Length: 232
Image (cartoon, rainbow, N blue to C red):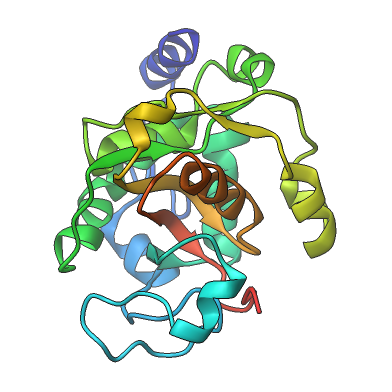
């Protein structure tokens, strides 16, 4: 609520302009979106980044042992421009910057032969949630599907993943997520949302506890994926 009021006040004081070129109108103009944001269009295995050739299969059979996720969908390929844009949403507290991306986000899954029973998101630790007053992963999940539910709880604080290497990221999020209601996820196919996928430590940790609670399959959706950081 506080963040929403803050953003509204800013919009009244300062005209809305494109984050990159400062053209008035909206937070991201169509020219800059096409210029700086590369669409993630290929169906690739998120573990080895190899092309998937069987319809409806989103991870290679040999790669399953290295990931709790059964597949990963992304709208864009992560680059420095997108990092800055997402950073402004998360750390500049300007959640409205997701709005110009809504159509592309929804198209990502609508163009796939893919279905799920429940959609959720990576939770924040309660203290961080209160301080930030929003969770960008939750907002993104609600853009994908308004029926997004809180299925997970993060029960202790962790360091920011952006400042850690691959091994430290896995240790950092190990055993920090719990399923809120195990009966709700049992025998379900679940889609879990987050903003960025780099090493996959956070999404894998969430997928692992959902499967331990009885979920049949767990897929991931992110706004951007780092193609240079394969899991295996």
